[in-house]
Length: 400
Image (cartoon, rainbow, N blue to C red; front, side):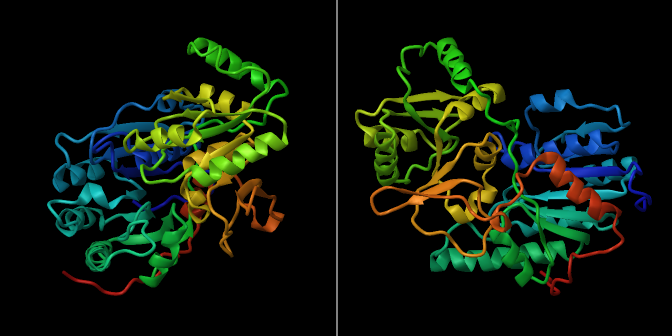
């Protein structure tokens, strides 16, 4: 089926998503927020998942007033046979397939190509928007020789499978993957990570909601006076060293004549060692872990805090949903590094490590990126959907 003309035309769109293979999947969260935005813009959407996924509360709140709809098909077994995907596609007859690509779900044994190529063969009859959340490399800046060779082999496998597709546009949610895709002959666009936490300006009485939250959780005695609150939101890697950033944030709180306290919210991921290292390093600094919380509770905490601390490197902040949430709630972010990489978009208000104290930065408007959201990202996809141009590029021929 060809794409209908006119910027208000309702399209039939398939989202091929990973699902929750071994636990809650961020790529699936990202994909389903785009699904919701597409349906609320009036499109008919079919979600095909390679693995089952837990219900997302935000998917129960979709407005269909524009005439859109969402149908979800979970696999009869995981991963599904390509024939099952082919049958679902034939029944739905989509204008477009949006392929949310994450390599781990295609791995069978130690290889990606056999199953991925069969799925790509099924998709070859349809126009595809390819959203590469990961490519063939890890986040390591200096991989070992063994991993370097492995990355090269994965690159060969993935590109050989992608060659089967009719790709109209290629996107990357991680900006560091843009160069990798360009080196493979594509012309990718950046489609930033957004947060599922509602964006809202800081209210005038922002500490009241936090006090209510702590009272509800049984921590009413944790805050006294007017402390300087530093927030950890989400994952803390086991090997991350918080000592220098905690020292300089404590100095910041002393300059404000306020006592520092640390609060962790959300799932810390990995094991619990990252947070335990923070607590041990903090020593006598009051530290509280609130854990998994509702979006409303997270917003209350981000509004009440003085700064957010992220273990993410500044060059990768655009891949962080927690950074997007902090920015959306007007919370300045502290990065545990001294340098600012050139030629990258920056948060509107952030700090890096200085010699003795934090260095705060408010970049010029031309270096600050617009806060991403599901609707903004979908509108970008929709603009390309109705464009007659194709910018995928022409990757080199590969065969296996």
